[in-house]
Image (cartoon, rainbow, N blue to C red; front, side):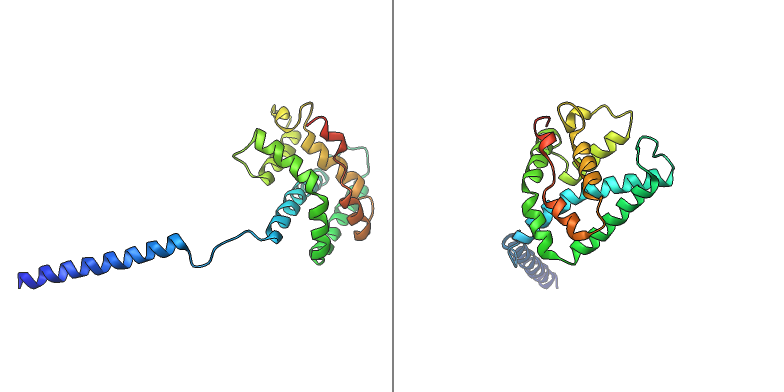
Length: 192
């Protein structure tokens, strides 16, 4: 009886080992190789840049809600109009993937500049996190990390702030698209 139990145990272990080994082989080789498609690359640029504008719009909404627009000389209605124009543009661009692709191509220089700065100052963060931290730092008076986001001032916050003011004057999504394609980074290049 003991003899059969030993054999049964040995055969069971061999079977378990064989099954486990085969799974490891499949894990190593993978069933389908994962490759990054050009679409994912393009969306990566788009998402990173849009993240900054989303953050600025979010802050503007909070300022309107908290009635803390005293630093900003324009009226509350003008800010609400900019928010509305931005929301309409985002809805429009999501329905037009070819236009989104054009923005990806147009934003290559800005993306590369931001990515280079992030790699130098915050390699442990994603670009979206780095941009969000830069904008949060500008909003927080106790933040002393401004050199992390530009040589003289928080250039990342400035990039998204200045462009959001100039781009969202129009309520027409096509006009906003044209302005977005020509995003102005010239004023931060030398101070980055």
